[in-house]
Amino acid sequence: IDTTAGAVADALNDAAKTEVKVEGDGWNMVLPKEIVKGATGVVSMGAKALSAADIDALPQAVKDKVAGKAVFSLSLTDSNGKVTFAGKNVTVTLPYVLKSGESASDVKLFYIDDSNVIHEVVATYDEASKTVTFSTDHFSYWYIDATSSGSSSSGGGSSIGLIIGIVVAVIAVAAIVGVVVVKKKKA
Image 1 (cartoon, rainbow, N blue to C red):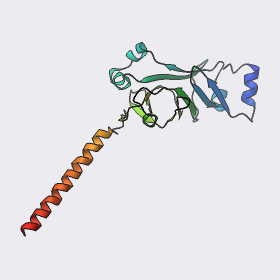
Image 2 (cartoon, rainbow, N blue to C red; image 1 turned 135 degrees about the vertical axis):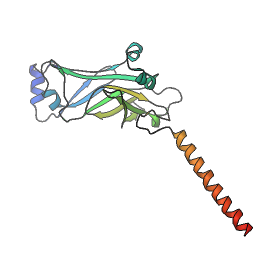
Image 3 (cartoon, rainbow, N blue to C red; image 1 turned 120 degrees about the horizontal axis):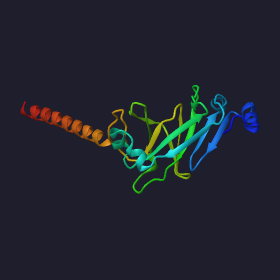
Image 4 (cartoon, rainbow, N blue to C red; image 1 turned 45 degrees about the horizontal axis):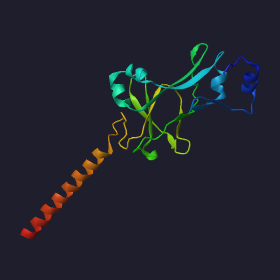
């Protein structure tokens, strides 16, 4: 987007228009026009699917988490470098086709922060358009995971751990009830 072009400048100054929508190869972004108005010169934005070589350049701990996943680098820059979001959110839609055995209800989205910590983000998967949509106030590396156990660094753990915990608790309660019943019969 060339913010110095007449038509773009007119659109940015049009009070009736509140957003700017940009579409790329299977992705789109909807930005509040304040973000674009605050930029200088040509504004460039994109959602690049990382290649195997790009992923290989990531730290090992991150590579382990994103192995086999769809990883994207989101960017928003102007003539001066990165554009700030000025406290606003951008809505991003990324392409994602479910693999064999994956379920739409299991699709999760994560981002990798500057310290290489992984965070889960609320996102929705649209089966008809085969896209994941989310809202964010920053850009970084993002990846999509559709495994039923998830891959969160927040300590959420897998559902298997929860099931094991429940089974252990049920066995413990059954053992206590069994001991109480045996003691009552002896008395």
